Amino acid sequence: MRPSAAGSLAVALLLACLAAVAGGQAAGERAGVVHVEPSRYAPVVVIEEFGERCIAFGSSASGSRQTCVDLDDPKALVFSYTRMMLGALYLQPQPARVLVIGLGGGTLPTVLAELLPQAQIDTVEIDPAVVRVAEAWFGFRQGPRQRVHLQDGRAFVEAAARAGRRYDLVMLDAYGPDYIPRHLMTREFLQQVKAILAPSAVVAANTFTASDMYARESATYAEVFGPFFNLRANNRVILAVNGTLPDDDAVRANARALAPRLRPYRVDVERELLRFSRDRDWPGDALPLAD
Image (cartoon, rainbow, N blue to C red; front, side, top):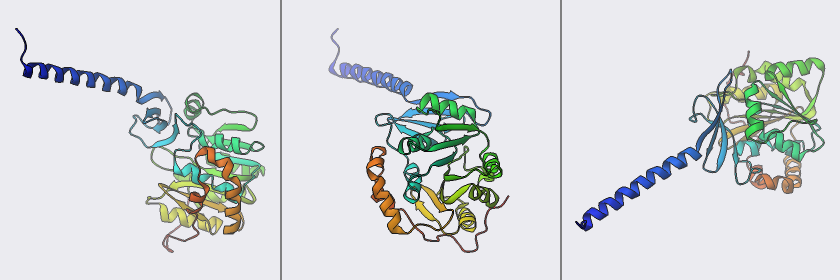
C-alpha cells in the first residue's frame, strides 16, 4: 500500500530527529571532559568546548576555568586577567629574575619565557597533577630557564627570603577550587613577598573583582606596599612596586614599546592602559588580612 503524504512526513521528521540526536551525541563525545588527572587536592579536569581547551579543578566540568587556550590560536591570551598580569611589564619591562606562584596550564610562565629570553623563571606549584596536565595538554615545557618547584607557595617565598634571593617580578596566581588560599593573602605573607623583591621590583596579584574579601585584600596590599595600580575586568589585578609607582608617562612609554611583541598574544596595550587606576576604591576602615 502506498503511504499517505502525512505518513511520509511523519517518517521524515522521525528520521531527522534520530539524525540530530546521533549528531549531538557525537558532538558531545568531542566536547566536554577529555581528561581527568587524579590529585590529592582536587581532580584536575581538562575540558574542550567552543574551540577552547581549559582546566577546571573539581569532580566535574562545572568548576570555574583556571586556564584556557584557543585551539585555533594557541598564543592568544583568552582571559583578560592574563593580559592584565602582563601589565607588570609596563612597570618593569626587563625583569631578569621572575617568580610565578601557581602554574595552572602554564600560560604566564610560557609567555614570559617567550617575551624575556634572558630571564630566569621560577614557578611554584604545590600539585604535581597540575604540572603533568600543563605539560601533557597545554604545551608547557621546563628547561634551564624555566623551572618548576613542587612546593607550597608561601614556604618557597619564606625560604627564598631566608636565603636572601631577590626577584624583579613576582606574580601571584595561586587558586584552589574556590579562591586564593588564605595563607597566601595575609599581611605576613605579603611582607615576605616584599622581602624577596629587588628595589623597584613589581608584584602582580590576580584576585576577584566581585569578592567579599575585596576591601580587606586592598587594605592588606596598601599596608605592605603603599599605593598600587588597580586593574579591573572580570578579575582584578593588583600591581604594586617595592618603591615608588612609576608615573603615567613612563607606564605608557613602556607599554607602547612592548606593543609589537605583545600583539601575537592578542594584547591591545592601549585598551589595557585604560584599566590602570590609582584610585582607592575601598572603605578606609577595612582591616588588613592577618595570619
